[in-house]
Length: 195
Image (cartoon, rainbow, N blue to C red):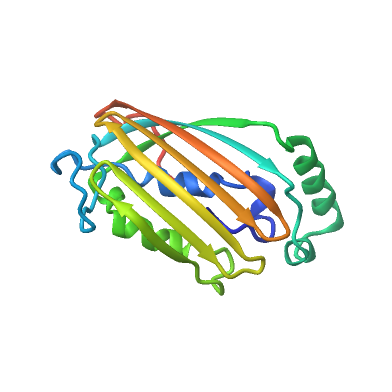
């Protein structure tokens, strides 16, 4: 899950950056199902248009001193108000994405998780707990500031359905939980904006 920094947090929820990682984590029908092999490269799902429903819940979230120092007083007040308003309440977002075979190399996803630091100075470490064509389980440790740990699981239930869950604990800044349900919409990505 991403480390927030500066005003990036002004525009995103605590875990929304991970959605990008998850959205890129899903494809390759050529791999046989349930191969518990550490060398498995992709999840066994269909390429094309996908709809992801992401639900996040945060508790005890507050701005770190480092983050607050990068914000104007108005930005800090706005962010603190948003954090109080969302405390313990589920926030759901639905988005669409076009996934290709290149988007889903698990090694690429793991590297992106290690490199998704906002300031480029912190280097997170990702430990693969298990990896197969149907499931990826990882722990992510970031030294900070502030330090954080994340446990993340994504599973291809079928070639056209995925589920994911993540739990993040950021020292001094609270905890967050995320659940994702993804469904394949078809091979055509027409009308989907790729960022």
